[in-house]
Amino acid sequence: MNPPRRASVWIALFWLLAIVALSATATLRPQLLLQWTRYLPGRDKTGHFLLMGGFAAVSLLAFADRRVAARRVSALVVLASVTLVVIVEEFVQRWLPNRTFSGSDLASSLAGVASFGALGAIVRAVRRTRASRN
Image (cartoon, rainbow, N blue to C red; front, side, top):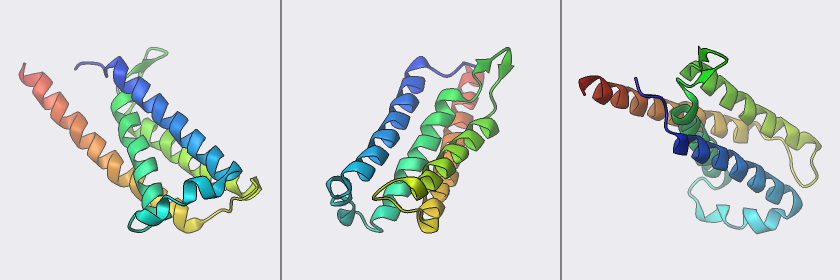
């Protein structure tokens, strides 16, 4: 089995940085970011679904099957870590100015993690099948 490529790790780290930047922007200048969500069907909830779901997929592709301290990181550990990041990100909003905790935002984010995590798992399975044929 081929280990994940280094580029996918950079993409996952960039995606996490984008989440942090968007969260900071929403805290410091909410109207700058939130004006764009009105163009999405489902508005803010769709943004949560896509942003956190995309992070789950790229993280799964980047980190699953990598070796850390002589052990392979499983897909389940990667998705559990992403889920923890998503939950912490939403709960931290309780203490930030101009932000509020929202259970429906959290649900949208977790639905994205589950959906895109499943897509990432499918992509991994297809890659493994192709690699085993060669």
